Image 1 (cartoon, helix red, strand yellow):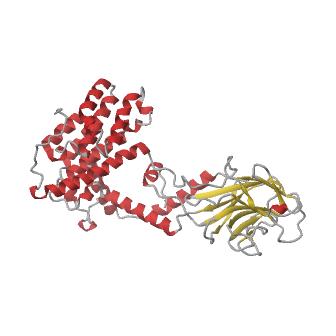
Image 2 (cartoon, one colour):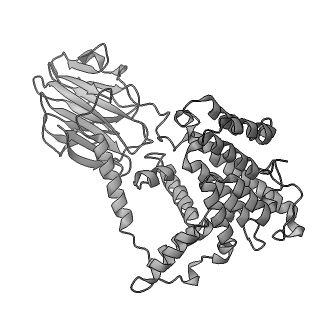
Image 3 (cartoon, helix red, strand yellow):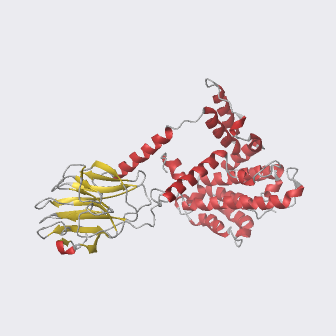
Length: 474
């Protein structure tokens, strides 16, 4: 066997011989978890929640009051060509698709090319079964901001004072803020006002013209908006963040959460500095036992876990293997385990990192070849080997393997496996996540449940994106 390999004959005083079978099964489950994390590295950060949800792209030539208007060939402009006689000869048209809902906000705009004889132009949202010869807002399940009087209409013929009128040359927008459940309207780059969205079901962006020669162009995002929708969304996230920051935690609670995180992952040196800093505060911060933190489990093998983490993060995989064989041979006794696999992969990656390609090939033939036809491992083996095919592997599709985050995954694997050797461990799943991470997982679950109860409207909660962008959202 290669001297970096895993011993299959070792036993350990850390293992209770009466529960070896059960522990082995738990270890396999832990290993599977980290294999999935390694795979996620190739996918990068979670994508946008509205991926796959189609947005409006043009006006609907079928579902419109076509007898009163002329639509351009690109289906993005309409003109009223008749002479209006009553309230049922409106030239109204919906978008070809409803507004997408799995995002923070949806928005579209119109440019008033010609206000015509009376400027009776409308913009808003309507339901699928809206009567297509009426202004948006004149019928139930519709809402519209009208140009001739600046009124907002919400499901009845009588409007309410809302904003300024608009006419030729103006750019007017309509949007939905799914976080606040409000419609908002804009004129010439500025928000005019908001109103509660009391309509359910799919809502279609809708525009209307109702006097001779009125003509508008519609922008569904095929070109930049006049209104800065990105800044609007950023402001909304800042508002949510400010709400969260108003919630205060007693210092000993937050101190305990952070301390448990450092203990769980073996950051012993940082923990010492953290404890020293907490004692220098006025008054000193103390950790109350009734907070529910059980430090005994995560104090287990703290120094050894710190050492192994440092070795792996420095790319010293041989030394990490050596320490594991001496301290916790049961962690590496199965040479086809997920832990051994990830360590061998990391050793191969480190050789590629320093340009020792011939040595990497030899190492791969000895240590990685056994995983080529093993279910659950073959895809990651292939991605590791693919590093050899690129002159600049860090810029390739498998470049994520050379990032620090990949070392973190391997270090976290070893850390969890050592915690699992603690005879006093109550819950092996607890070896995977610190108390802080469990709280964040609960936060994620609550945010997703809240979104589900709201008809899946709004931006999905991605913890990775929140932490890396500095934004908080639910």
